[in-house]
Image (cartoon, rainbow, N blue to C red; front, side):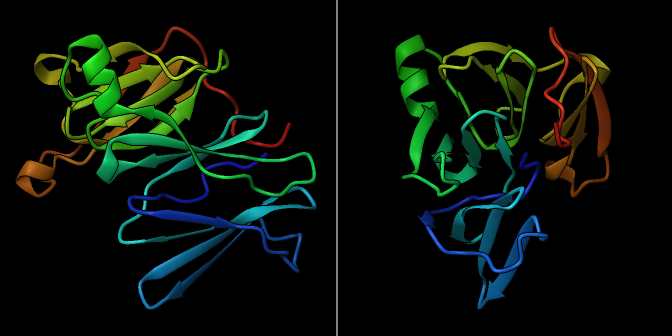
Length: 198
């Protein structure tokens, strides 16, 4: 299983390329502010993802896709992992502008950053520009939004991790330079998908 490997903010290019050391889960290279991540599932090479600019998280769904938060475009992308372990073409799984238009709302996936699956296949997305947790169904529909209130309001949420059905959220507090950064805890409807090998 591929766990939290890398983060992508900008254009992603996925190529098939053999990896010569199957014992390394990821290989990250910095080539003049360009990063390349080799993805390996056990002894099978999954692919190479290159990106520019800043970086955001990716998660493997445990079945056949690697999901990537594209923060700048307010999208969740996914990369099919073929039976032979190679990577297929990048697909848009969920697009914030499309969701906004379809539901008559604003800020869907605005600043999509940290992502994590629950055991039902729902994808929890920290939309840091909306200061919300947004939950996507396995088919990419927005099914829930949570912002917190009072002392529990989210403040530029960036990273999350499940522990059972508790979701721990790192709030970066970007507007004040991180002075009021905090850790929030949210109780989800279902436990998180385990990140370790199964």
